[in-house]
Every structure is written in structure tokens, then in C-alpha cells.
Image 1 (cartoon, rainbow, N blue to C red):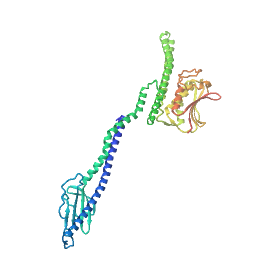
Image 2: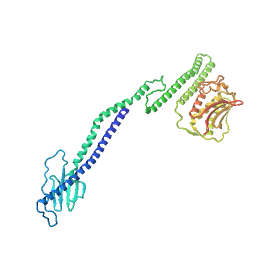
Image 3: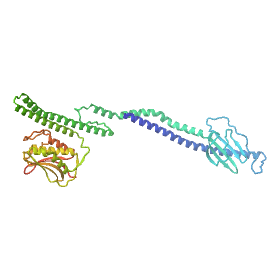
Length: 458
């Protein structure tokens, strides 16, 4: 069952029915207890009246006739006639009685079962003649025993009727209650329906936060979560639109260059010119290939998915791997590369491949934007309470007003002479963000430039 309305209605209905059932049971138990107390009192009264009547009749008998005693001293004259009770009264309580002494049963009602003389004085529930009876036994000196009994089933029937009368009105009101509950639940869920309609009406062009003044308190966390999701979707789509626009603009240049060089090669009759044009085509293809690779890598880093599983990275080993990966590139461009002495540093938590990619990009930028013969140094150090991985060079540096734009996608300095797309530092900046670090770029005195990934020392 997926409907919240149906769940609430079913739950409240079951609770109402269960409460009504418990009320019947409690009413029955209470009514049976009260009935027992009331009718037990009637048993006591009946026993007292019966004993008083027997004493009265015996006294009258003694006055009218000569009293004769038996050998054991007991009276020989008892009321021995059987009391017949054939007329059934609507309010008859089905009382029976048995009076006995040492000589046996002396007096009993017509419908009375055989009651054993072994019963102790007091009230007991016993089974007699296939019926359940509640029997009061009263013993008078010297050996007069009076038993007064009442059918147990009659008591339970009376208690059940009382309980049923108590629960009958709530039973008739139960369908009305369920109907009112349905209407109340339906009305109470109207704000959720309104919220659902508002959300379903949103489009990709309309991702502003949703404001519902009548939103119940229980739905506010859901509304907040929806607004956060809309904000993330809006940010992701904004990044996608910007990236698509910028990438299309950036790819247009190398593709146009490749097209021109291919046309030159096709139209050239001179083999040397044709080979030169084909070389330019291959160079343009390599540049476009690298640009596409960088854009795809940046696109994968854009979603706010975090790093997921991280590795424990030794800074010394990381710089050694970067050195081995970039030594050939630095030498080929006429640069020198080295690793500065590294002090004992705590390990880094992060993605080993991404950090290696970031540092390799920094080395590539240093090789592309410094004159041949410059020294590129890989460093890891603690500086001003920060743990930093840095790439430094001793080149001419960057104009101060250009530093703030170096991490922007597709931005290249106005003095840049090497081929590139302006994505290298954007990728490094994104990797730093994913690791909770900051990409710091600044000139070094008296000359040179430093690009560093820095974490606060913890």
C-alpha cells in the first residue's frame, strides 16, 4: 500500500476498532464483577430469609403441637414439603436452595441439583448437573446447612448485555467516525497535494526555490530537500550550459586550423609543402585530442559527488611518481626538474590518481610558460600551518593582474605563447576543491612562480 491517505485511514480504523473491542472486554469484565457483587448479596439475603423462615415455622410448629426430641436431641419436626416453583417471572434470578442437617436433605427447591455436603462455608463456583453454579453455603449450629445457588451462565449473560449496551452506541458511531476521519485526512493532506502540483509544474527553465506558506511542519524537511535538489540541478545545468558553450567555442579554433591545413595539403603540388601541412594537421589533431581529454576530465570532476573512497598517500612517494612521469616531458622542452628535500610529513587522505594528475598538470604548465633552461622544482612542506604540495619554477612569473584569472576555464594569459586550452589550472582547482584544499598561485621573489595545493594542518 503506497497511498499515505489509505495508510492513515486503515491505521486509524484499526486503532478505533481495537479500542472499541478493548472497551467491550473491559465493560464486560467490570459488569461481571459488579453483577457478582450484586447477586452474591442477593444469595446472602436469600440464605438469611430462608433461615429466618425455617426458625419461624419451627417455632410455630412447637407452639401448636407437642415437641418431640429424638435420641440425639434434635428436633423431629421439620418442614419437609417440597417447594414448587413452576411460574417463571421475567425477573426471576433462577435461585435454588437446599437445606440439610445430619439426617439428610430436609428442604429443597424443585429444580435444585445435588449439592455435596463437603462444601465449606462461603461462596464457590462449581459444576453441577452439566451447569455451572455459584453456590453460597451457610452453616448454623449445631448442623444446619443452607445452600443457596445461582446459575453462572445467567450472570455472564447479564454482564454481557450490560457491556453490549455500553458499546452499542460507539459501534453505531464507528462508521461515522471512520467517514469523518477520511474527510479529515483528506483535508489534512491538501497541502501535500498542493506541494506535489507545484513541484510537477516546475520545468528546467524554472528551478527557483519553492515557497508554500501553508506547508505543515512535518513536510518542511521534504520541502527543504526538494529546494536543495532544485538548487543542485540548477547549478549543474548552469555548469553544463557554460561548459558546452565554452567548449564549443574552444574546439572551433583547432578544428578550423586542421581543416585549413588539410585543404593546403590537398591543394599543394610541392611534396615539402604538403608534408609540412600534413605535419600541421597532425599537430592540430594532437592539440584537439588533448583539449578533448581535458574537457572530459573536467566534466567528470564537475558533479558534486565528492571523492568517495580515499587513499592514504605518502607525499614523498607521490612527488617521486610525478617526477618520473614528467621528467621526459621537462627534458624534451629544455627544462630541468628536481625534487626539493622533503621533511617528514603526515600522510594525505585523498585520491592518489587525481592528485598525481593535478601535479602533472602544474608541471606541464610550468614547462609551457617558462623559457627553456628554467628549473622546475617539486616541493612538499608545512608552511604557515598548512600542508602544501607545490610546483615552483625560476621563470619570469606572471603579471599580478593576470593571477586572479588563471584558474578560470579556457582563460589564458595575454602573454601566453605556448599552445593550450586554458583548462589545466581549472582541472587542478577542481581537484583541490574535491580534496578540501585550495589552489594558491603567486609569484616568488626575486623571480619565479609557485602553484601549490594547500590543506590546513590538522
